[in-house]
Length: 63
Image 1 (tube, rainbow, N blue to C red):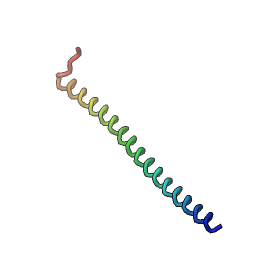
Image 2 (image 1 turned 180 degrees about the vertical axis):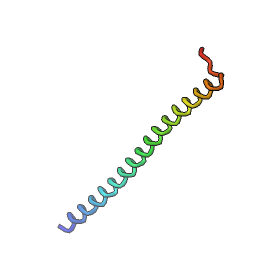
Image 3 (image 1 turned 90 degrees about the vertical axis):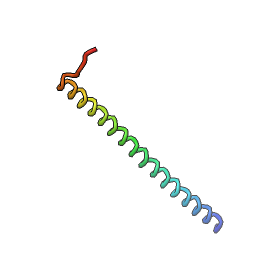
Image 4 (image 1 turned 60 degrees about the vertical axis):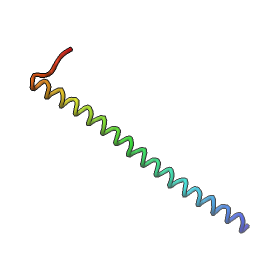
């Protein structure tokens, strides 16, 4: 019975470690996705500002 208790304790510790690892991966992926989202927003915003300034200063070309 003592051996079973020790085994269950080890499994419990292992599951806690796995849970923490999954949590870390989930947080990292969330940060990555949010960063990518903001990067796309800033790229499109910069492109819009760039188009506006070219149009404003008369350097806008229509090919």
